Amino acid sequence: MKATLPLLCLLTLAACSGKPPTPTAAAQPAAAASSRVATPWDAMKADEQRAKDVQKIVDKQAADQRKQIEAQTQ
Image 1 (cartoon, rainbow, N blue to C red):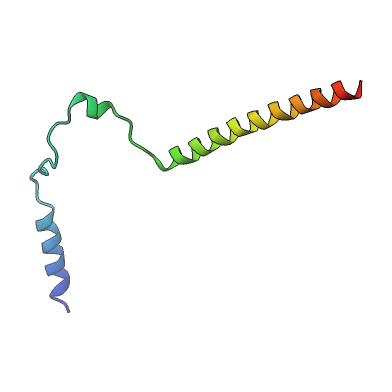
Image 2: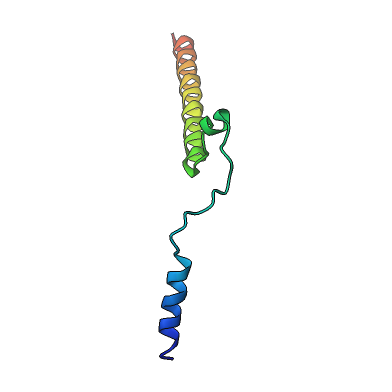
């Protein structure tokens, strides 16, 4: 048990050597680098915009119906 702690420290220090990490991907083209990365909020924003658009349609239909009712009552 006493030997495991120094061994664990030695292995940790050996894993954190001074050499820099190797790059995992080559340089990306400019078009790919400028593309937007999707986030979890994108779907929520799209749903929110869709709801606003539907609300506009409903409001317009309600206003048209009010106008028709007023025209009939006169």
